[in-house]
Image (cartoon, rainbow, N blue to C red; front, side, top):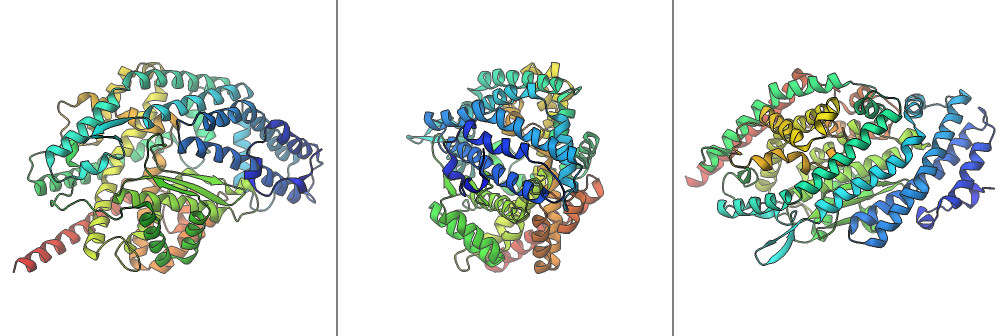
Length: 579
């Protein structure tokens, strides 16, 4: 029998547990009679259990990501996937059915219950071994891409460590670094194509097993996308094509003029267009950590205290190194009400923003973690990214060097302007990624052939991304889908970024009017966790959940207005110095 009082307080005390040690706790919960009088205790104990088992899985994923060459860490992770995960998922399904069949509806459970009903409908026992196989294939993607290194100036470096060269003022050096990186990525073309075919076949089978006509419908259910449809996404694509693509083209034309180039090549997109050296906000990861803590201290004391707790507890892995997962991420650790953050820092401004971005996720988990039940803390991805992107914009005014910041006031303004410009250009790229995924799962037989994927990605690229010259780089364009890990590892997870960026910039527009009020609204929305619909969460944060050209156009106009204003101020400063 299970004794919930004996359940460890710390998930770290359960890292070596296997299913035989976990199962009695589920058996005890499944055997309880359930009534209005004891549903709170039932949900509380269920939450304690899920928090701990979920954190164990999270820590095993973290250990594998910290060193993808660590065979022992990989083996522990895979043992959990193979021996524990299927049993855990099945037990969770049985508990979910128990609660649903009871007819009980605790306070604050309207949205979670709907989510549980949909999840139960999409559950398929036959898919459990396929989910394990899928997770292993996703790990294989990471192993392939995270091991990509090149020889650069006498030493072996990761592709992340090569990024500073793309900001060099020497154009030949930038081109050399870009082509070297692209060549290395293309060397894995066959391996990634093979992996893709295995993943796509698996996904089609999983949808069929669960009784869905296609994988997109299945995925829509799994992702609890209650508040919008595939057609909503396509409306957003059209809005981006009509509003953001022309704005991004204007930005490219301005950049080309500043660089005194007729057209922009891909190695011209990251260098400062006025010939200034790349921003160098820090030299060590300790300086990065201290600088971000300083920014958050000036923004909000609770945010700063939470960030410091992550640092004190060893939950920040910031340095770039070989065999470390290449992308930044944040993994929630439910039992501790903490999160683990990974960043591949190489001294760039992007590293600062990535750490702030992931800190937004971590703070969101922390705020939602104050809710009593884990089902209430399940955050919709479309709002999770408002938390992270919103944090970037809320913290940006504190980039200047005051009490440990990163830049001079002029550099801080430059950093914000760079962000505005890149974020305008992000919407078209996001549309390429999302539209590609809709095409894949509307046409799985065609998409099974990688050459068709190459052609479709190229068509979409030229639809949404203009005023960049990719002539003689056709293979690099066509295989762009290889370099977006979401397509391989997190299908359909990408439109969230575009929607959330629109929400985050609406929060920023509020900040420009009344910062204290905007920050308070942002925190209130985060604290709601997954208890409200997306329109309600956005509204609480002071934004509108929208797909239309009007809402997007108003924000893009504000961003361009700020960029034009900064350009005018810069020109005036230069003129004054010359005088």
